[in-house]
Image 1 (cartoon, helix red, strand yellow):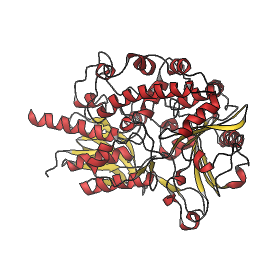
Image 2 (cartoon, rainbow, N blue to C red):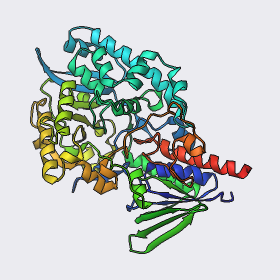
Image 3 (cartoon, one colour):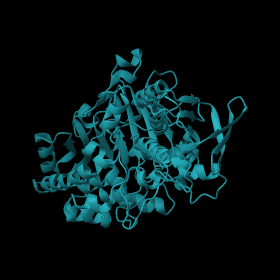
Image 4 (cartoon, helix red, strand yellow):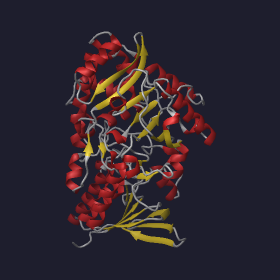
Length: 518
């Protein structure tokens, strides 16, 4: 096909590759420019443990928001496996150590687990009722994610007014405390509102509500699945389809300047061999954070985003035994919660907001290798070795400014985990890597280590919002019509979804089509 215009995509994350594939398939001349020696951004697999052959999903680690429709449309050869356990939350009750088990398909084990914790079925019924109502919102939103932004009214009209108020109009903490009586159950619900978001569940900004919504709308079910081969397998497939479509990918090239003009955009940078890079394009798509894009454009950026997570990757010789006696292969198969009673989460937030590392770690663990052992090399795959990934909450950059504080937070994570183990975890560790938000920023050029590139936004048009250009309608606009957002900073960005890349590509194609009709 004849090229319909030239596009430079700044940043080579997974969204950039999605956009490149769509635009190149449409006949556009596309070049992706990436600072690192490889593409993928946070969606990569790496051998992070010296001398140990385990290709771990180093940063992003599970898939939920990636639409099945996009996978099919691009022809991605991916296997995403379900986990039999949704979550396991250990606790010590009157009867001794135990744990709240929630199966992916809830059955007798889930029912029995709720009864042991709460003494009856009331809390389980409240749980089932709440998530059934959340599912109606997910089913209303999910089909709109690969289309121009819907209006808030069109989504609201498809769900019950009570759940709309609980999720969209009032701080989520109110609904959690009204609907659930048990502190542990409340905390399990609240966790999805706090992953990557530094907030109280009662924050009036509702940033926690938006985070909760994004964690539960993927494909209308909110299920988080394991990518076989790790996140690197997802990126490899996206790179394949982008290259096969004709997109060019330039790595080891750092963009330093993006200058927009009426009729073109100039992109300037330097290669890994210190050679100047300069190209004029008809359009630029930005896969980097809006804060970084502003710096490239010589503009005064807004407040720098701040991440709030401690990320820990572990390789263990085997899974540790639990004080409760629950089979570790069941407990660690899903999301294993640590220190996540609601009161513990709120205390951790208050302590971090006051500038201190939370006295007790709060976060969640996940074991990739219980679902997919293909990421282990031959010498490990034949042993009981497993990988564990921990995502710590309420550890913002301000309280982890240096290696010493990062090490202190890591030790508190180990202590919080050990509370529930029949043996200390440390003697089982074969390899460890932990990263604070600032270390994530250093590795990925992600400002403040914020995994969403900034606070998430509602995935619909606000009241009175009147989009004009296709970029406005698709939620990928900047203040210049020749520059579009295609990464996590887009209106419906965040997580490994490809949605930002898809929507930026389609907004640009809509714009080009409208120009051809003029």
